[in-house]
Amino acid sequence: MELPGGNRRTVREVLALSKANSPGLIFLSETRQASNKMERLKWRLQMKGFVGVSSQGLSGGLALFWDESLQVTVLDACARYIDVRIVDVANDKSWRTTFVYGEPRVENRHRMWSSLSNLRAVSAEPWLVCGDFNEAMWQHEHFSQSQRSKSQMQAFRDCLLACELLDLGFSGVPFTYD
Image 1 (cartoon, rainbow, N blue to C red):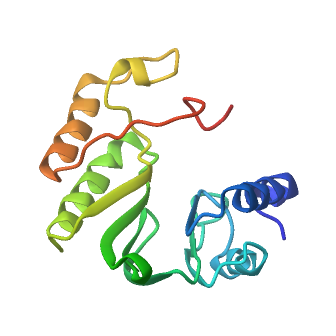
Image 2 (cartoon, one colour):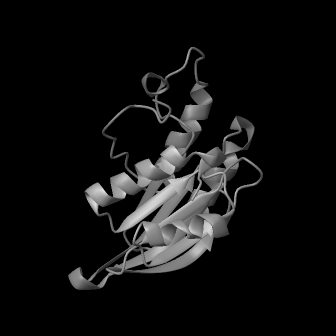
């Protein structure tokens, strides 16, 4: 199985992380693959369910895998997100999660913020939104020589506030290209 740009090492790393951590859900963004190719990875990950969004050429692509302990209902999926309702039957818990790969083009980010606001209105269930928003809340979170626009970051913070979302932070390296 090949993943982004034919990178077998990436597949080995995903499989190793899955084996070491036994997650109930795995979300991959920017897969750069057709959905049917990504679905083949389901068996190697020992997962029961899959939903994917094919990349457009070598850009984008989303994949969500889940194991048999969860009931996952896909509510919506597009190039920028996969929105699902999750039921953990063993613990009698349910919630909604939106897995995001944010708009890479700055001039189109307002579309992502609008989509999140629309998704927020769908349900009052507990809601987790995670993934890569392609945006920073504050300048110190942006690792680049060029400065982020203050209005650009403010628009992101305004969206999070309107959607009643809180930043839970992260652990590990502060960027994905390390």
